[in-house]
Image 1 (tube, one colour):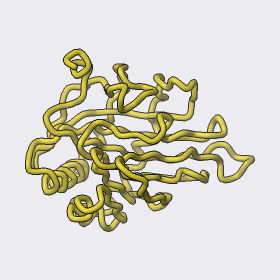
Image 2 (cartoon, one colour):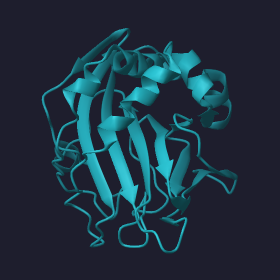
Image 3 (cartoon, one colour):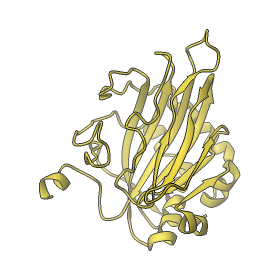
Image 4 (cartoon, one colour):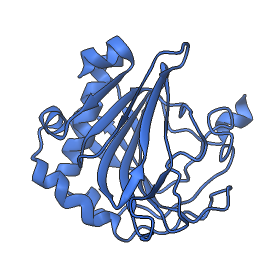
Length: 239
């Protein structure tokens, strides 16, 4: 995977490819799905939508060691997120019953090793986001900010579950040219790894697969890996 990431700025992994990379059993990853059933609503959506639920926690990966850090706000500069940038967003933390499992440690440290193989061995500052996008309002937007970068080194998007929806096409484009790929993630724990400096990404809206049923959802785990520290409002004040 690091070779593919270096060559093209992104790498798609099958569930089996992910488990091989991080040294985990697929059944262990699949068992985490229940942690997406009680996500609180996202109270910061500036488009007025009610389609997103989420939790957020932060970690430091240093080699084979994973350390949780005190709960902190999620913050992005406006140049990376025009819709929600410049705002301290405090989300409920992730459940320790999930993040305390050995499979969680293997997942983050295994991905951290791949990041180090690509950009050099170092501690990685990781923000973890659980997302559920649903079709309660008829349409759900996985990336309401549109095609974007996140201002980090690497972004990992893993599909956890998908039920009763259509749409949700993943799009990855070269940040400096027209080249790009489009595909739809459908198999649980299929995963996309992005070099955030080289590509921009987005996911198209989802709709109910059956026009008479509005209860569909798309669950993802998004991990961002950043060298040097977490993003925070001090970045704006020092600019």
